[in-house]
Image (cartoon, rainbow, N blue to C red; front, side, top):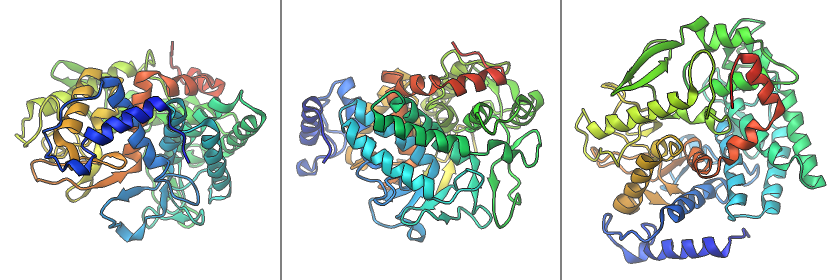
Length: 451
């Protein structure tokens, strides 16, 4: 039984009686009277979304299910498949649960202990986990035919969360210190340098025990994978050299460009200049723990880069050049999410904007655009109501243009909401991750300045 503070219980009582989630009122979306303060609304959203990783977790492992479909229809019957990266985000969401009074520290410790035991026994390849894992057995579920082994990017997302948990408990009770030590062992066992494929000056995303390096996917910037290179350079046991970062990720300087739109400058590109930037998860996944405030290297100021990308995304939806129904300055946010025909990396642009808004895009951008994100939050909650709000917070995506409101969740989108709202409110995860000595050393090796 989870413990909820009296203060939070009052918020939940109010929201249950008068929120879009109250089925007894059978109200129509758009008739809700605003009754929560901004602060209480943020707490409510964090709580509901946190529940995806708490009550909604895969029961054996305690980790995050890849997806949860309220309609009960799962592709390939994968209800018990866990996601490595999304679980990393969920580890941090559980810490937010402690700090917000949703659960106790001991309850979280018990859950973390189960997760660590599972991860120690689950399939690993040179210390790295696969993208998907069967929660009942710890065995790999192939993400695709040849993607049946290590996924070093998903492992990086998981490790970012694990290190945050380590830092949270590292000076705690004896049992908490022991848990932190177990996490430290997992961290030291990941062979980051192996993924340079024998010493090349770039990291490769996948390795398979059956197909070797056949996927042949070099991880180059700029995109969501910066955290991979930060962790790899920070490893105390299997570090990469600075050359791998500068020649591989930064493509010997080709990562830089001068681009942007609406007066917002972008200095980084992914293989070619993108004046609108990419999907917004580029500004989220690597920065759940990695603090972008004052973070700079010779390629960019990462706070300004992320903020400008977010503002371009907001402005595109506000102007709405493709005239999609529902888009406005308070209904915005394009990122990778469900779409009408599967999964798509939604982004500003003629071919990449499909008329689908993903709530995680605006909500996970609170640190960069607090005013615009709060306007979006209120619109999603008060105006779209039951169409968008469910047991685990806002559903993954919707399209008013296509009258499409699927009641489905994805872990990797839910996790960033809890974590980035908390970073906006308190900086919790940024402070914890950046307190790790190895991370500070890795940043220094790669030439970063972080105040």
